[in-house]
Amino acid sequence: MCGRFAQPRSAEELARIFHARSAAEIAGERFNVAPTDEVAAVVEHHGERTVDSFRWGLVPFFATTSKDAARMINARAETVETSPAFRSSFARHRCIVPADAFYEWRRERGPASGRVVRSEPFAVRRSDGEPLALAGLWSSWRDPDTATRLYTCSILTTDPNELVARLHDRMPVVLDPTDWDAWLSETTPPTELRSLLRPAPAGSLDAYAVSTAVNNVRNEGPELLAPLSRWSDGV
Image 1 (cartoon, rainbow, N blue to C red):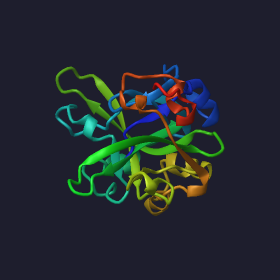
Image 2: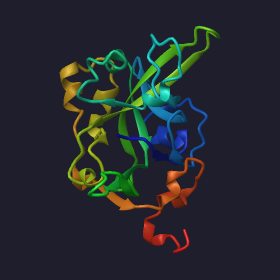
Image 3: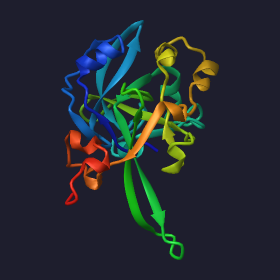
Image 4: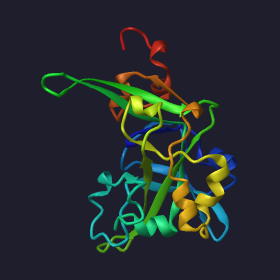
């Protein structure tokens, strides 16, 4: 799964990278994005590409309440076309969620109890330092009580590559720059979309241990992305 990531770049910088217009008021410098936080995502309408703001945790348009959004942060690539919660967004409302890294926890279990006895956080990022383009879906939901619109998103996950498999049995779908146009286009056929839902090559990514400070969603700052060896012994 993908349950935490870093999005330190401003909406303006992301707009330059993804050849889009900035329409979001997100300053960046966020290294510990958690479910239900506001995130910047790249979307395309009638050929115009923008970076806009969405709440992480998709609320389907037909939902009667938004309370389950925290459980909808990820959509499985294998079932996204048939899932009632995601199939409409997969067909018409796709986005890219930029991230400098996503975090994953390597868990060790006791041989007798099967319980987690150790959990180590790792950061996974592109080897070339460029942002990850995470394949996402978005939805517009109307609150029946207030009539206000809530724009939300989810990140697609797939089987892990050899690198991420050492940490977890799922990973986010990372789009290659050559696939951005097809993913965002409103006219891409489903067969081509399905072909994009694959693990990124292991050689394109790096993974390294980071401080357990990232475990607490209240902690922030660039030090969360620093390799563990850079932290002092007292942290």
